[in-house]
Structure formats: structure tokens, C-alpha cells
Image 1 (cartoon, rainbow, N blue to C red):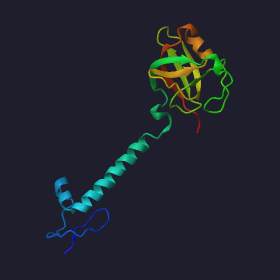
Image 2 (image 1 turned 180 degrees about the vertical axis):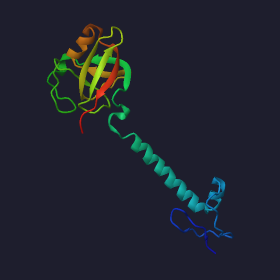
Image 3 (image 1 turned 180 degrees about the horizontal axis):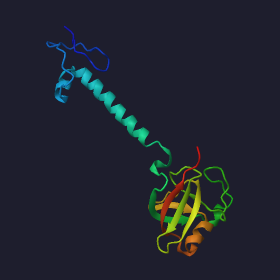
Image 4 (image 1 turned 135 degrees about the vertical axis):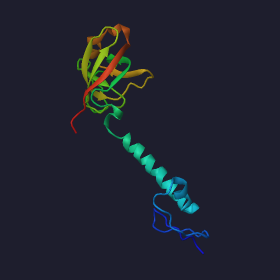
Length: 172
């Protein structure tokens, strides 16, 4: 006799496993009793569906703009600046890089996001707009235009310890 237990996913068990007990279990059963009310195939199927559901939920939670960086979120690390050889080259959003503009590159923030970058050594800060991707060097959190970098520190230093705070995300 095929399994006659009710599968909560499909309404009826489609497996061919023999089943001596087809009693309906109460809805107030504990987890082990609920699992016992399913045949092995239904438990595996429900487990797979649950696993896929959790994966989809996790991915959906990671998909919002900014990779988790909302207004007021802060990040610390090293800031570098664009070398002069990048002048007039296209950035990731299609604009031409200009060393006199207050722009920056960030790995995950959406283009158009405005951030405040503060030099942790001297407290000076500058507001820049994200228009490129990078930096792709461990420990660096932002690449600043030369103009933005000189407002908060000396170009001769090359790197600055900074705190990056998101001020506003771009309009959708």
C-alpha cells in the first residue's frame, strides 16, 4: 500500500513507500512529531524547498543598493587619489575623470551617492560624489580625485586614514 500521509507542500504524498500508519497528526505537534508525519521523500523535498527559500531570502536581503551602506553608515580605511595619467579617461559611469572635480571611486556604493570623507589625522573633511568603481587594493576604501584629496591632506603622503560617511543616495 503506498504512503497515505498528507504532505503539507503538495497536499498528498507522491512516494511509493509502504506506510502502516496513515493517521492524521494534530496541528499542535512538536517538530519531531511533524517530521515523523511525513515520509522520507517528503521530508527531503520540504528540506530542499526550505533550503532554497532561505538562500533566496538571504540573496534578497543583500540586493538593496549600496551593499548595506545607507544614509549615515560609516566605513574607515585608507584613501588614495587618482594619478594624473587618468585625467580625461572614462570612469565606470561614463563620465570623464577630471582631477579638479570633487569625485571618488567606491567598490559598492551606487553612482551619484554623496559621501563625506574625513581625514582621521587632522579632522578635515570633503564631500564627494561617487562616479567610479575601485579601489581594488586591500585596506583602501575610497579613491579620491586629486582635488578632493588635497582638501583633506597632502598629496605627497599618498594615503590617508579616513572615515567615509554616506550623506545621500542618488534618486531612483
